[in-house]
Length: 547
Image (tube, rainbow, N blue to C red):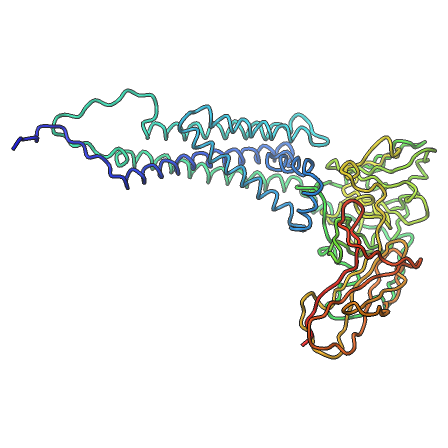
């Protein structure tokens, strides 16, 4: 037998070990990409804390995505996710970024320039998004630019270490081992070095998270207006609202409260980060087609005669029977009086309200000056406006959906013509006038509720803002319409609650419908239409099971 003991012997890794080694290399590369992304986000948040929180890369990109999204996509988001649409959007952006970062890591361990190029692209998109926001300045580009540089540098360093561990750098091949020496499995030999890369990647993620969270906390603290809001002393109204009628709420268990608490008031807007305005720095500019342009500070506004009134505000995105409607007692200065003080010129047709975040809301001027009580509101339900509802000042004009009447975080009012300017929502195809449609809703019983046979209490709300509700009718299983009992009327600008005793409810499944009639006698439209472009229509219905 031939002696082979003098020959070099190499122990090749088995198929299982080869597959495991390949998986470890891939996961290590992905970790490098994720660590680079974490470093980028952390750096971006830290820089944004110094420049402007809204310029943080993810926020800037998210805001641009909202503006670029087709109307149908926005409506789907509101309809599907409700007031949680913004967290869902941010989660989607983060997920997309993580997937791209993982791809960048896989590319970077093969070719250095390809991975870092993805981070450069990420930075360029962030810079573009930040600089195209209304009111942006050149420093707004810094968070995304710094994020791209830091992310690319972190990825390059980690991926470079991984390339050296895996022997993928352009090094000379190792010399042959001496005769008879058994060489080790390369994957085993590289474990300590690879572990070092993984530890570095984990440390990068942890450090970046701490920096990012610290930057966000710092930004929130710097922009916090909680103390300034708490310090606001609201003057007594020169024109207080009368007490609500005792019978304005039927007192049916489960019925929506007549007055909506501030914490429960709906919020539908495009702001990913809430504008935070210190009232000491706030000014309102009134200009355009006026004889006397005005500039008011917050103290000037509070020095004006303030008025209180109760008003039901609703969102045009509300589906039939939807939740985006609420009633509150507003306090503010008269908007028509301020415009008359400025001197409205002949030919002016619309009032453009501009928000601190650049949102534009167009209100038909005729609706502001026809005698209704429009306000520059500073308070809701006896307290200064919550930040999410427009602190320190917003507009309120009865009879119109919020998208044509309710500018939150108001800083500018311009009188102009319809031809001269299309506000934000009009540019996206929504109706220019925004008049609230007659609507009604069944609150009790809840959909698919099980109720006992016999007498069943039905109750709900109806509104036809600025026209008033004259009647509410209900029917069961397509039978004859029956008059519901209306609660006492609190005025044409607020909703009206109703109740009805359904006698003789028999076991089985039943469909209940409701419709309202406004004070002028116009019956709520039956045909079902979606909110776009001028508000939803149709009768609300619910199905219950009688046991």
